Structures are given as C-alpha cells and as structure tokens.
Length: 108
Figure 1: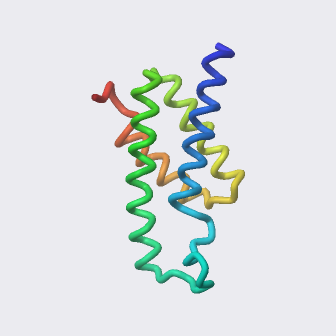
Figure 2: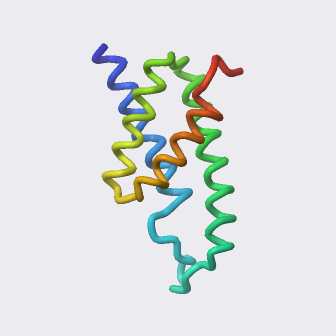
Figure 3: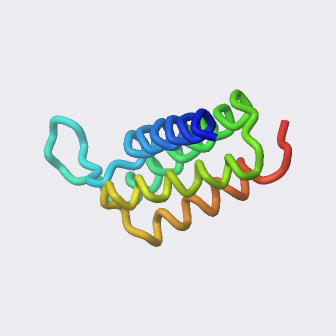
C-alpha cells in the first residue's frame, strides 16, 4: 500500500505540474507584460488541456492504474490544484472532464 501511495502521489504531482504549465494562474504574454485576451486564453487553455489529458492517459496506461488508484490520483490532483490557488469550480470541471474522458473504463 505504501509503495502504491508513493506512485499515486508521484502521478498526482506530475499531473499538477503539467496543469500549471498549460493553464497558468496568471496568463500573460511572456516578455511583453500585456494581458491576453479572453479568446487567446481560451484557445491556449483548450490546447493545453488536451496535452494535459493526453499525459493523464499515458500515466494511467503506463502504470496500469486500477479504479481505486485512479480515484486517488484524481483526489491528490484536486488537493494540489486547490492548494496552488486554482478556483474550485475550475478544478471540479477539469477533474470531471479528466475522469470522464481518460480515467473511466479500461481504455486502450
């Protein structure tokens, strides 16, 4: 169990790091100091989330996570994202989407 929990923590941390890269808390254009438009933020977020979901699926398949491990990864990710300051509704939406599209079923 301890070995599995370490793996769950590792995967949760990796997914949290990827999420922070693709959906930053404060999305600004690098080096310009200008704020992104809502449309630019939406486009960047959608593309980034697809990358995030792909990583989640790769981790699930690589480590052959069972149902309980998937739930623990999702819970660990939720806790980390909330601690980083992401809004609860955003975290909920992302996790539900991840669970529905990547973590449900036996997959490929």
